[in-house]
Length: 86
Image (cartoon, rainbow, N blue to C red; front, side, top):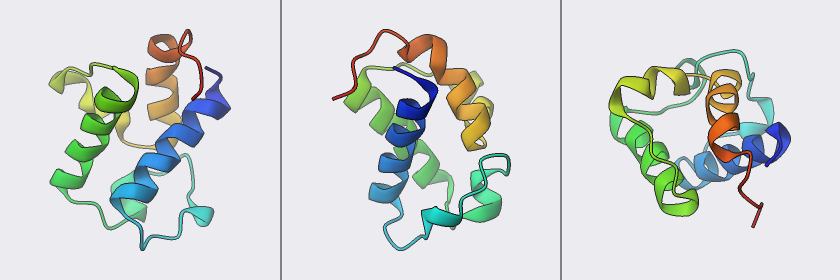
């Protein structure tokens, strides 16, 4: 999966978790929580959706790597590079 495809996966998850948010203005460099109305449960939902949809296991100690779109894509790229986009 390419970086762009991983970004689309994350955007899809964010859309399902926060359907009222305008993701068209999302700044990839700024933390999700600084831009979106996400609480800790929403954040855990992102992790759970990655696990459910793509079988990506993210250890709790690595959650900090999922703070922004840029850091999330960078973290997920080596894990998802061999996954086919569905």
